Length: 334
Image (cartoon, rainbow, N blue to C red; front, side, top):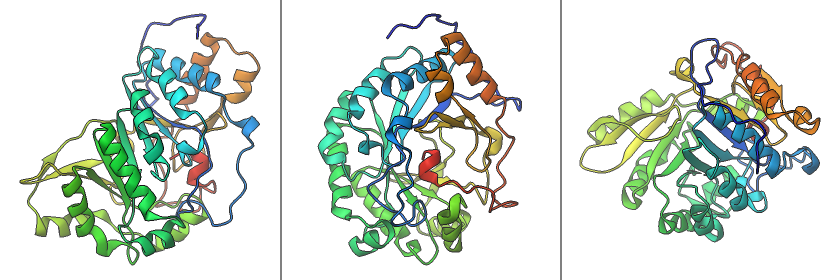
């Protein structure tokens, strides 16, 4: 794909001095699971396919971000593997100048049959949502079948993805009795484990907040069983890592509520309909699809992105205004 005006690479910096070098790209708002903290059962209010950014449009936006200094792209959803021909898109994105790190977040239900092709297309790192290792509990949380996820994980391991990160939303009274078993599972298979606090995003997120678990207490509990050493992991996300002594296991803690990481936020989200969201916990957004379909030039697209980054707020307000965000997580992009 040809671009009419290449631009010298530079950094995207917001008005608070944060460098924005990471885009979370949603390729669909649809999902084949119904995790109770993300999307209500029976939900059907999805974006119409004609509102989805086409692959050419996605490629053009990400190319503009690349010219502006963005290095990391994570493909998300909804469930991104619901989108047809995803490996075709990932091949195109991986080939763009400036894009150095292409990763994927998935629920892994469809990963078993796509893992090898996705790896060949240029994706190297993968995050898998997995909140429990108990089949009946998995069904209660997601409405799906655990064996499909486990098969997908093993296929990803065989295909050569590294690291493979397990994202576990830790919830009081739901799965907090599985913390140790998830640690053991990740040690056994060489996965990285990340615990995530529930966030009040949409009605489902607020309902899940009844099960909020402060991850500082989880970390303290783990420190009584394991020797935890300072740890680091590649990637542009917000997790703070420790390493379990005597193993290769790294455990990350994503704490938007108990210890927010807004001062180091380096990311924006591009939804499937072409809306740039600057913050999960605020409504600041910028719509790119109308501009793209009106024939905006590459120079104008880059300027629009710079303008959008100028809207990024200093911090979220999950604690002060938990009712503020009404959109579902699947609409924003994971």
